[in-house]
Length: 148
Image 1 (tube, helix red, strand yellow):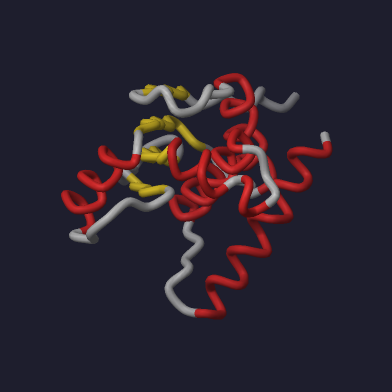
Image 2 (cartoon, one colour; image 1 turned 45 degrees about the vertical axis):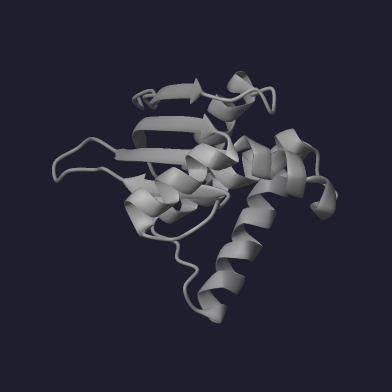
């Protein structure tokens, strides 16, 4: 008899008013990515902010000026029962950029979460080859997730 897969603890904190946050869909996306990537998330903390707050976080943690779409951290410790992810997402960026990508702002927000989760799993986008591989994977996962 197989053991039931334990669901991660998912915390979503929204500190903005730019975009409605689809909390159930976010939780479903985390489960979907874990299943497809054959990994386990023990805990996923998601902070959704505006561009001003994202600029502050981007400088504080990465020493980059300006806003960005997502910042991800792997806070896992040796011996943890799964990955511990912390994501900071810009809702204003999703609202602004989504229509430019022919996506709703909510779908763009899900794309940022998916991108951050892939980073925590181990995907990288620092070289053109890695970026292309990661982009293909996130587009495939997002397409499959939306088609369910």
